[in-house]
Length: 362
Ligand code: G6P
Image (cartoon, rainbow, N blue to C red; front, side):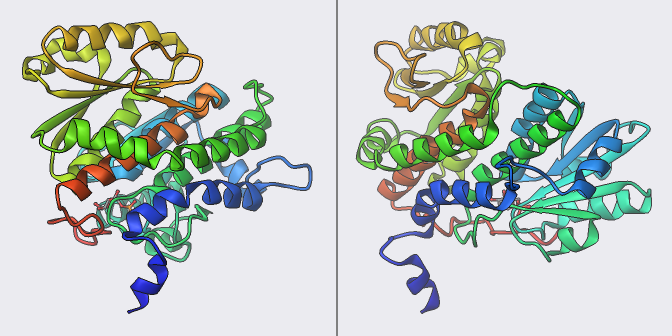
């Protein structure tokens, strides 16, 4: 059938979509660059964003996890305060809003009912809305004032992969554009650094055998797994854990490294897999301290670090990219490890039980 043709030589859409990420980076660079080779937003969107005194990101699932990283980008690079909310909570538990809020809806499909319910509400209140979606013309895109497209191409596998990294790239472009408009120097050339990210993604996609080995070694028979990170690595650990539980049904949780000792460490037993992310120089030593704490309780650690921060015994080393953009590459080995874990546990990778690609009921 048609879906077989689209999959080409790939056994699953998920693997194909993981492999497409370098190409998506190139597409995004092409779509968002101006004649001076700068990554920019439409003037109208830029001005609307600049008018706001606070941005509210609303999303669900993987898109929510992208929003958490996006908050970091926008606050650190452009100095604009951002809140991130899960759509289904926001609708009945609306926080106090700032004077001039602008809402950013992040949604791969543009059809998620929980997010739409909030959009209907904020439209009623008269607040401006921007939708960041892979499907321009979708409900969330049509009902918002502005749309930014992800240019990731159709995503078929239920577990979102290339849409997540596309969301991060577009959010970085938003942050860089606003920073420039405000005369803030965030210290790097985004177009150049995103191109480097694309190349790093290619390198990781070429290391599938090694990642399959890691999946077999740590995840073939385990009933649970933990992901830890500090700073932005914490947000990536949430997404890594979500990928694993969605498709392999292994109970997986992401935690902030420092929070482990306040409860979760009670769950560590002999052989419990703990995937630790170390891509941020400011917390490199402290996350390694957390690894020691879990190892002392019998955990089986799998440290994924970035070149330059790596130490002896690390299990997988990411090619070096700008630290701010590290989440765009850190998630790739986690996607691939999840894929192989699901495969070796005979799970239906593209269509996991109980899940739908987009949830159109509240
Ligand atoms: C569903 C999918 C998730 C996705 C979430 C939000 O639950 O299974 O993979 O992250 O919806 O979807 P959206 O299209 O709004 O990004």
